[in-house]
Image (cartoon, rainbow, N blue to C red):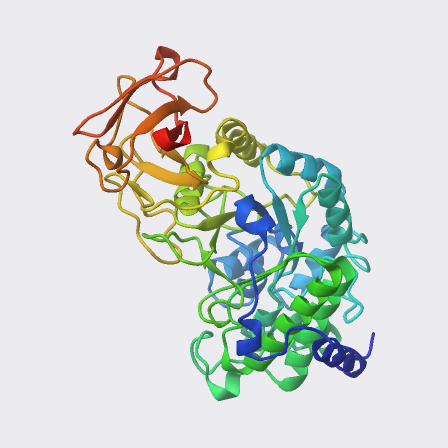
Length: 491
């Protein structure tokens, strides 16, 4: 094990020697890199020991110790009592024997993704990389491979940007149900995996003073995260919730200053994703989990969601979203100055389920035709039009109604306007009401209207009703058509 104190001193030196100090005013000088703002679409990967039981969701390691929960009852029936078969006993079953980082990266490239973000450590405390601060990692146990290293090399080889996700903060309390029942959580031999298993005095999201993480835990969190940055050079670091707790505040500022100063040394733009109010606005990029927004945001933001409705990791009996639903969300998010991070959950053996491959390839096929209206674009004056209402907030990704052919979203590239149809046109006719002949949104004249991916000339006219477009017969029932609209002054 490496010395935490020595690494703390190295972190201080890096902060002192760089352009960013560990205070919010200094961190307010952060700028979002162009690769992220223009890339628009990334792939998230939840894969770990929790993929072995493949039951309910990635919180299985917590819930299997919570008496009378579905996971606990399933565990008793399938594996036995948690004092005889604990979560640690899944690790030898996590072999990743079919994992091929190059195969994954090739699939993500075909899906049209520009950045890839695997979970380096989830709440369960098992690191998927060569972590010198714990023996509970994928190089020492389970696969006995540096998963993060292999993925980073495969992703960069295909000219995609590499990032990592850290959920370690929640390890402070994640296994605390095991304190209330006979379990292996109580055995000090396994504290490196199970962590403090700190008992809560109430809800786990309540900032009760006695429930705040200790200085030693916070020091370990900071040093581990900085080491992860140095070892793998990720250009994006995603944090899950709970870092918004008060005790994390000074550590978040140090982490950001360290990371941004390292990025300045590397001459590379980097991104920190955070949830809720963990970071001061403008010092990192806000992420909304499984949620959408109902208006354009002045700052670039992100939503993370999954190909499935039911879990982030692989489980048996997934309920999958349709490619059209995901594409609709992608377009809606981009029209509002956002970025989409879409999750997949490989099986324990390292294979990506066929259903998930199919979804990714469908998205990639759509982007190969319509990517001009997505990549490198910026929001227009309004994000769009149409009858479908967006429910703002986290965990609302399955609550909206399906988009229709009347739901249009706009993006721009310079003076070019794109109008993307979020349904299937009826009778080959589209009406874009925001572009009516007397519209204050587009007061100038229209010189041309072209359909992306179609070489045929399309018929259009501007009327009081809106911009009326008549589609070629073979395009009349195509989902997600994108129109390129140029003004007369651009002729």
